[in-house]
Length: 131
Image (cartoon, rainbow, N blue to C red):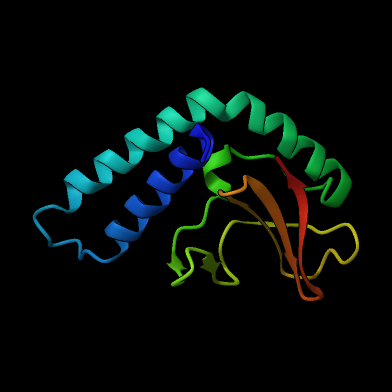
């Protein structure tokens, strides 16, 4: 597994950990702070490279939507299956104005192992970029 995948998985795991805590949990603030540090480090280290890739994806599939920081495209919640795959819900990633059907609820999601960007539309899920 490469370093960018490891960094994404660390963020995904920390987001999962945080999602299981209530705001009143005494460790919530500490876990949230670690998550923000992981996200900041990720954007600092991989942000420029990923923003260039995301820009190309946006131009091709959703030119009316703004490119956001790469961490915005990572899932907030996911399920890791027994075989190590990551399953995400239909509301993960960033909502975009899909060029094919601007009214459709389309989303772009950045996932690890291999590093890839998915376009989720009412017509299905497609990989629009892969490392």
